Image (cartoon, rainbow, N blue to C red; front, side, top):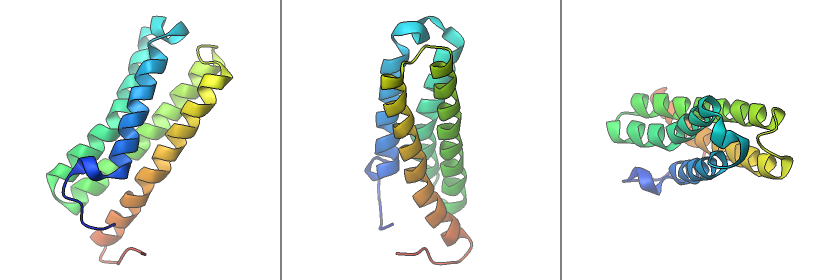
Length: 129
């Protein structure tokens, strides 16, 4: 994974931030704008992804970073569930839903990479190049 000095340089953080911005835009219009509960939960889940990556990175230990990456990955799963519900109840039409879902899936996969690498470092195993 190379030496990274700032969390802002992590692709997982960058993509998570982009996803959060897209979720804020999507929840600010249509039916989602009027559904306070679902809108707020989606926003919280989306913001949790880059926030947890940043927090875990700054804590400076592999164990804390791994825990935070796990939380970020879990937040992506929460968001995918919320996106599905928003689509099911008609708040998101398919042409808006599918790109957001694809982005959330992509971010989850990207977060999984450093999570796996940090997990291997914690257990004393070397990550695969």
